[in-house]
Length: 268
Image (cartoon, rainbow, N blue to C red; front, side, top):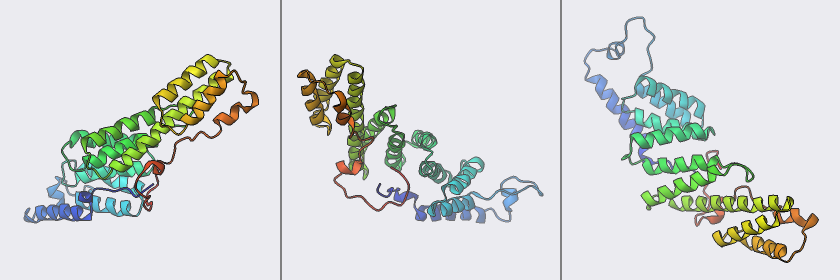
């Protein structure tokens, strides 16, 4: 998978700006100490300030220590939810869960970010990541297909909302891959019908597949199988050969006009 194209506005330069703003705030506070600023009594255990948590979180994130980074971003949001660094922590916290493979939790965090910051310039990236979470949740071909269906829905939403987004080519390619997955699932159902001597249902399913997905990779094979069934030929021990090459989830690069970039994060 190509490198995740994280939005430039959440780069180190933004972090430096946020930290500078925080330091200026403290400089204008006169002789106020860190403890008095945060309303802490003498003897209380001090919390790291928001800028320190952000720096520690980014340092861990940059070296791929997502678990440690997530801890710092969570602490930042827990103690300083209205700080200038909070939005950075929200987005990077979601990214951490995504790269740790916790796609369900990442999905919730990305959706929350989109709901709370609908006009933020990071929204195209967030929408892309929402679709990717569902894409990563695609199950095996013989089981739940909701991951594929939802990812197609979310990638399509991104394409319509931000047609000039840098994620469009990849979104379109992943839509095609997810569609191929759904078509292969339909084709697999035909095998079940044939194994249970339900030839009529098998033919109906094949006709639906051929009509609905005429350009799918499996369609020529589906046409050949339909012709065999309609001729009355019994497939017998050859039945398995008609379903042996089904792809769980085709490589989306097969449908992309872009060449794969170097991968730096673990993902499909």
